[in-house]
Length: 330
Image 1: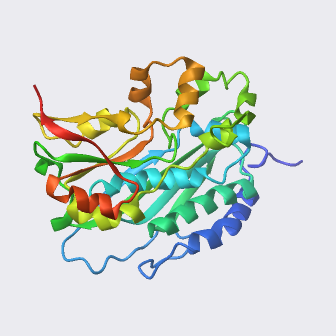
Image 2: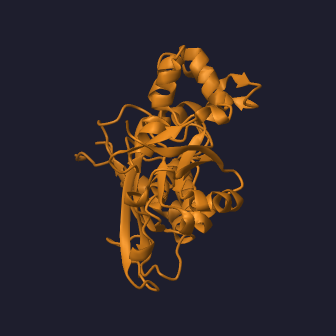
């Protein structure tokens, strides 16, 4: 008599081992000289050298319901970039360089080639950011997820010299707000997009080609969350604070780096709203106020600096533009 097996219960250990074999080279491709352990150990080791008074900065996040778009499009190449870049951008707001990243994938059934594609994207984003993919977890959660559903989240640790931490308490009246463009929705607002296009009932709208986008709606929605670390690093010495524009829109997130008694006067109308947001707004008949509350509307990062450094920052960051200034709360 044959007994019940783990595979019959929904957990395929052989598939998990195959996935590890496939993604191992991608993970190792992110290792620098500071990494002191190999793939597969219980804990990852990373050295910390060259800092006088290092401060660690940590952040964690998930990709959210953008994963449903990836599933409907059967396209998993970019979501690994999303999960890395959003957390790298968060630690960047403190002036930190990313050191290492840990990922978590929760899924009903492991398909080794699918997991490899996801981890390959994570590794590519880590290499761009200069951080190691130090470890992770792929959990087979049979009976937890609906068919095709999965979770992707991650955790990054960065480092910054104590003397170089960006300190929002130094922001003062008259400081200038400088914007950097987003690459699209990044990883926020996808539940509203799904609702506007009725995608949960019929995801076929994702395959419609839009001339203004020069691609399908689905491809535009899967545009990866932009990483700002490589481009922003040279400008960090001239900045007082940085706001990562995620859920809640520009004004809400800029307000998070404003000292008490100050507020950001923002003019998003200085640049035309990118086409993807216009298409979403028209389809869902969404008000301007709701759009600004949910989406980044083309602004992915906002930098705060003294008026004395505005020209320098604009020269260093050729895609940047001024969108406002810091005023006293009435």
